[in-house]
Amino acid sequence: MSEREYVTSIVCKCSGEVVQSTTPHLHQQYRRRRGNERHDQPGGGAELKCFYIVYIKRQHFEAAMHILEECLPLVELNQRLYA
Image (cartoon, rainbow, N blue to C red):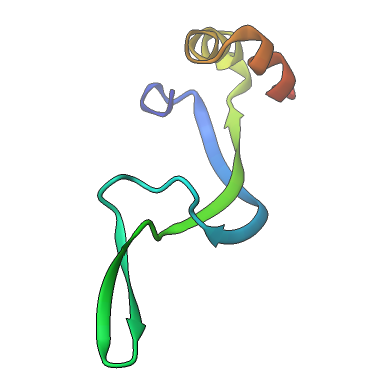
């Protein structure tokens, strides 16, 4: 939608605490130092719950809604949409 200039801005809002990822990418690793040894551990990374607010130009609202309907199930879209 942004490449079609329907969107005026996008805002990301944090909605929780930063925690270690419980479902990391398979190849993601981090190092934990124990004494002088270094060990690669599977996992790592941070998980930050957030939501995005997408501001759409009024004259493009209907076209933007059609794009969103293609990307999200209608039930989920109805729960998340504020117009």
